Image 1 (cartoon, helix red, strand yellow):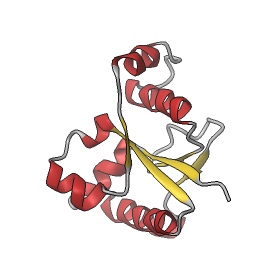
Image 2 (cartoon, rainbow, N blue to C red):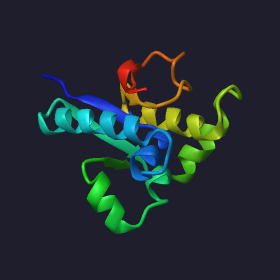
Image 3 (cartoon, rainbow, N blue to C red):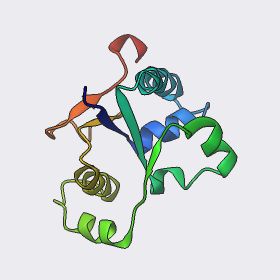
Amino acid sequence: MSVRKVLLSGELITAIADPHNMQHQQGAALYAELLKTYVAGTDRLFALSTDLDQFDKATRRASFSALVVAHVARQHRSAARKVDALFTPETALSLVIIAAEKITAVATLGDQFDALDLEIIKPLQSQQ
């Protein structure tokens, strides 16, 4: 059985952490489902260090301890600058990490990854 590698997008992480975010309920529900698959051993969850750096250690330990931190280095930033201009700098950086870590799925609340050859995980329509 192969383990699916799932990157949580920055917007999803922000929505999970902020109860006042308009997408918090959707994000929290999606994260709860991903945590179930993590515990079952079918998913390995990733997040960019740049997305987690906005939180203090206590928040990271309490809310995001299941996530593997994909550390963003200078060479990743340099490679992201060479990615197609159709993508935002944040999405370009995610694409570089996706390639480096051989990630096959992205959990997100937005549509910035929809055109890519990846499995896109979003909240169920009933949760939106």
